[in-house]
Image (cartoon, rainbow, N blue to C red; front, top):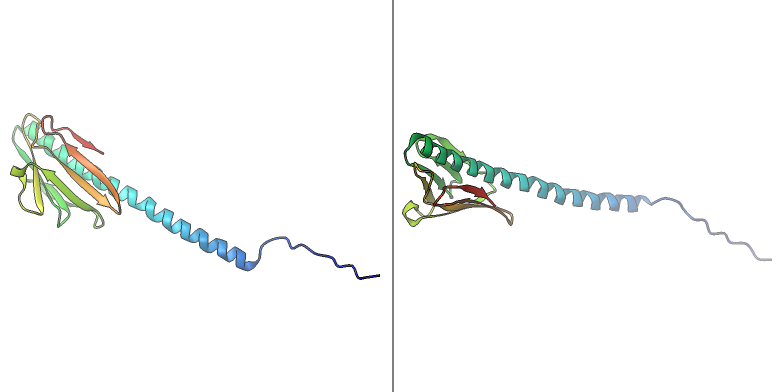
Length: 148
């Protein structure tokens, strides 16, 4: 009679298959890790800008005098005039300031002015990083600061 042919099944994966899966997993982890680190950087920058604006408003109310918060979008820094040093944004964050025309110093610098009653000239600061945007709004009547 004829010979019997047996087919044996291999259990497990070949080295090539394992390496392919590891390379794909590494690529996915790289993309995920990058997106996870960008969000907190932008969020932190927005919180710092909002805190600085709130600080300027508080000083205006407590000291009963006008306070000016300024931002230089080219140098990527902001400050409260006469109070402390300039604070820097993360180098990868782009900034845009929208403010009253009377508070535009130049194409690269704008101010938001706070009054002793808590009101302000109003405006907003947009912070963008790789397609993600956070907006810090300052209401002109109440001077209230919010982050979107």
